[in-house]
Length: 239
Image 1 (tube, rainbow, N blue to C red):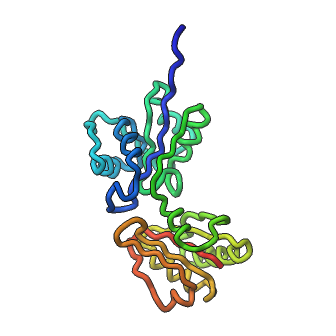
Image 2 (image 1 turned 120 degrees about the vertical axis):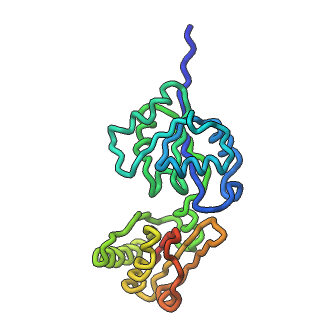
Image 3 (image 1 turned 180 degrees about the vertical axis):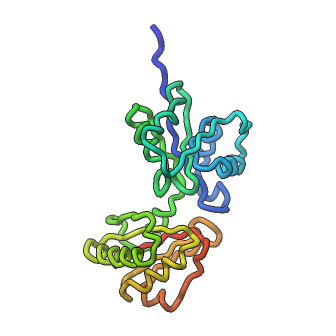
């Protein structure tokens, strides 16, 4: 009787949020799993190789199968990324920074892995969104992650007012992010459009030596502008 073929596993691999030691943010088990893999689904091959080098990946990168995905990946394209699993070959879905699939492409890959009956294993690692929430002192039982706000100033101002209103009405913590070089514009919009008693948490450079996390009301922030330009930041509002 022919033995039943074992299916491959899709591992979800978090990466560092910035220049910090691997040991500071990951368990050793992650390294063991990553070093066993030769197939990776990634966003950028240069940063993926850099991360693997930082954990002393022993393989020759010329023999490693890197499959790049983009934020605009189409649903019908995702199945091809999972072909190695059919041959009992494990795959690692690697984030660009933090955990995969949260403010990060890859969720369609994971959804189709489930559809096809493959095991999905998330590895432990830093999520800037979750770490910011637990460090904020805001409601951790009822919260929403909104991703990126509109870039145009008038649309952004309108959205911030809606966020504050919704937070006051529901008691939810509202969490959002911005491209680092636009952090200062977003901070200015928040302080100009929210009430003085609304709470704002700014969580910057999470897990790094330069980490900055403060929760203060808008009235306080108007008197104390943090230096956020080009620094990865999570914004949280509690009205």
